[in-house]
Amino acid sequence: MYTGPINRYNRMHGNGVFWFNTGDVYLGQFSEGYLHGVGCMTIHMDDGSKQVLRGFFHKNEYVGTENIPDDLEDDILA
Image 1 (cartoon, helix red, strand yellow):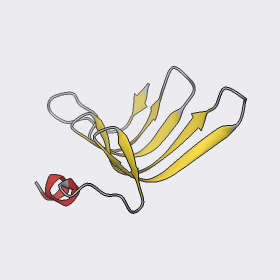
Image 2 (cartoon, rainbow, N blue to C red):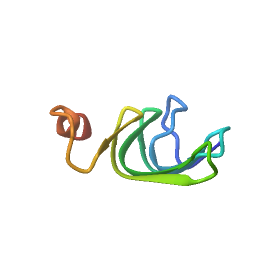
Image 3 (cartoon, rainbow, N blue to C red):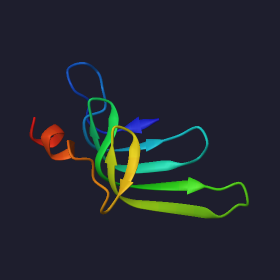
């Protein structure tokens, strides 16, 4: 389930929250339907613990706080 703005193509775009069927939650920036930009994802692990990822996401992939793809800035500025 998603809460936040959508673009004219009905895709998640801007700042929002996405709840996965697994119970995981992403709070952050979206672009053209992707988790893309700065965000925080809480992942529920099999042992009952939680893992929190904070930093940059690039087209649904967590890239951390330092390992930013070379084209990330180009995507943001485009």
